[in-house]
Length: 480
Image (cartoon, rainbow, N blue to C red; front, side, top):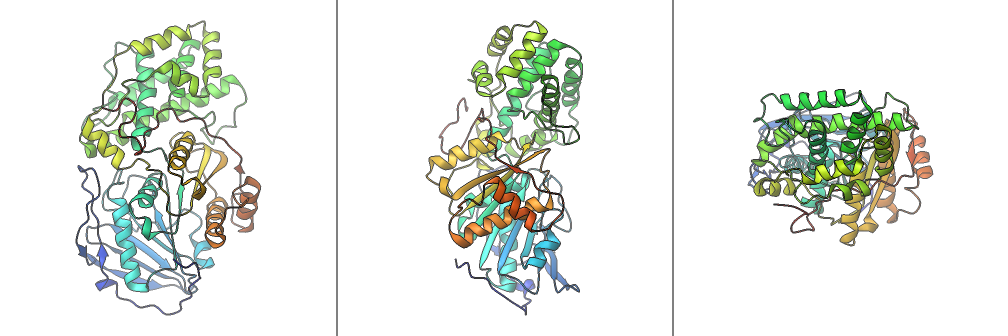
């Protein structure tokens, strides 16, 4: 596809008859299934504002809301934004917070679907995005360049677009996303909650998997959170909390309201907050809703060597120091974990999780990722797993990964969003990354936008991800 910029001043409106390629994935199936082309359920409603930006909203045939915006000085590039979060937002979002006005001023066209289903909509979201792109192209013609981007859950949708529809895009920018995939992410969440239960409440009946059917209450998550509160009152409890968190690659700074810790006590307190977040994801609504979609438990810890995991986690010294302070035997607790009965996954549910989505490592165009160094949900360590998978397919030259020195999930500034996008665009224009992804270059690019919030790109090497599970493996370690 040519990188030449396209300029348009007049638009053809034919949204009511635009063909839509609606590819629906069953929430109980294992892969997207091609469907017949359909027309929109609701014709686009369009209006042009005093800036010359035409904004259209509507729904595709399966009810997914969409929004697109086209400036009068369209430069030919279409940005396809995938939203995060579990809620179907109306009107659909078509850009990250704080940057849409700047993007439109620069000449980008913006597009986003809110997907046809709430929750972990990685099965539905990619097809809904492509259907919306078809409607857009039926109205305005094919863009000269199309870039996929999205954050959190939308990052997973972006990764799925990279794998399922490579011919439709020229570049991609997955943001604050667990790039190692769904099975990998929730396996490590299980490791953390398994260690907490085994060491702090070994006789309890806390349900770690096979949760009450969504949307029933999940009282065991509340009980597990209370275990952390109680454990934090003693040296022994704090040591065990840190070890449980270490099994999920816990960053040492996760709360943006706190200063970055430099002492052992401060780092342990951040690991406790990371463990609370692991309980929220791993024992409450997110797991509960995915189990419903998958038809059962999609996580397992059969075959895991927890002593090996701790040694690889990059947290051995911290955990060991806390155990010494508490006068506890680290080796004995590791033996206890190793001897505890394990959790087996449901094979069909695991297959669903891997299909929706695990990385296959194949890149057809440049991909730039952006994560904060202190994200407790989209762990920075996922980037190590994703890079290893991409490297194994020979696609490493197309991938660059960037990090912002900040705590919190998707905690980026408008300047950083724009700086990352411009860096990817430069790669598409020139055919080379050069030094553009060095922190100083990224910070200069972001600052040049004059957008607010500052810029804190930093050189960062993520920890080794402990439970990788990609599509390159016929069976991941311990998989049922």
